[in-house]
Image (cartoon, rainbow, N blue to C red; front, side, top):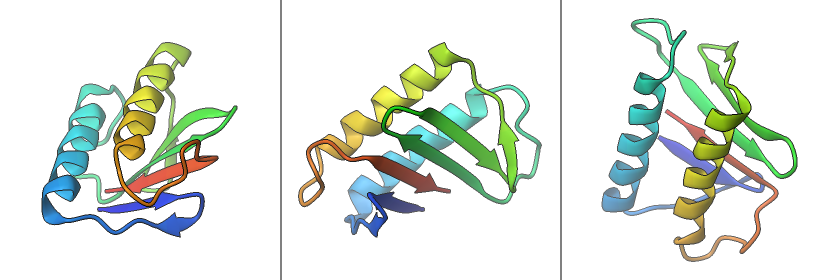
Length: 95
């Protein structure tokens, strides 16, 4: 799992990394159109642009409601970390 905020890698301890991984994996398992046996999922939240999800390089469609939930979760989790901007322009989680 990798977390980037405003283009910078964010170091996390094992506890925080496991929580973030478990939450994002749970979200991806809850979505339709995720292929079985996927190798990589990338969630990206951009300020003013919503949230995207790419699975093995293919864009997965999410409606505005789902984007809002996922974006709020990502922003809330990142806001609780030390040494990250208070209002990041972009958040990227790679599983």
